[in-house]
Image 1 (spheres, rainbow, N blue to C red):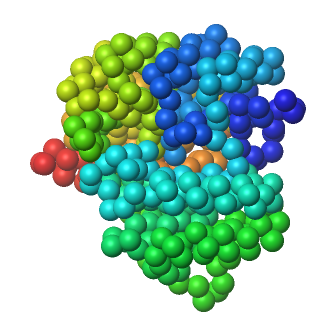
Image 2: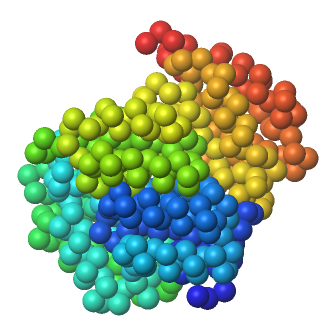
Length: 401
Ligand code: SF4
């Protein structure tokens, strides 16, 4: 294993974890796109033993283990290998977690994504492109990758056609062409080849000339909420989508979820965009799994106020943070009214990946909370944020709905 990677912009992996405020962070996506219940249970138990007991699923749907040391992260990588978990490597080519299973998808992007990933590996593009360069092949459906940023993206347009775009989410990428699946692979390779020729710091946005087609101006539209609970699949199956509150959960709770899902007879567990897991099996198992998730503290209901609250990593996970953001948003969610507007809390002025939210508050250097120009103590911030939420027009609309 190399020394812990401290470069901004680098992607942590099991073998190259990244230093954070609470130790090393390792990230992984299974190469086959799913864990068996036994694999995920084993990985969660290993994370419990090797890390600080906190695991996460990111907004893009990657699995993260926190609080590792150089020795324990090497042991965790060995644990994962012993469980038969092969991490995805090379250029990330992502497709929706339910591709090929979801009757509501526009097109199944899994074959196209696989052939792009295999071609990129044969061409050695993984070594020539920067670690953050990614391709999204989004077939739509119940759990799309519409909100995932990509350097190059293909969005299903129906009738076997794909919209090729550069640098953005589905709504904000610059549109290039509508092409067939047969053409898509070559066009994506050509674009990746040009990005690679510009060096490892280059990204898809560097290919946009001054007169390139641009997406609509203004803020990106708020992404539609992803479903929570049962999602019908082809062949009498269903997925139960459970969200990790504020993106994280105890490794112990995840281990128990995976073990009990295995006992119930579920087939596989996939990582979902939006900080969630999808447990897949016979349709009749979806509600028992949902009840299990609820009992273990996962978000299992669409009206759970925890879905309306988000926070960056915060203290102690991020060394730059001035606030324990997760603790503060937990306190807020417990007091929020049904139908409330959304709120996001950033632990410092960098405001990393701050989503569009009705109310946004930020931790200050003095360990206080900045809200609408006022600086408040943590204790005063909770009632002030609740007040801002109560009077926000989006809350009034939510109450009327
Ligand atoms: S906004 Fe600040 S505290 Fe939050 S993750 Fe980014 S750097 Fe860390």
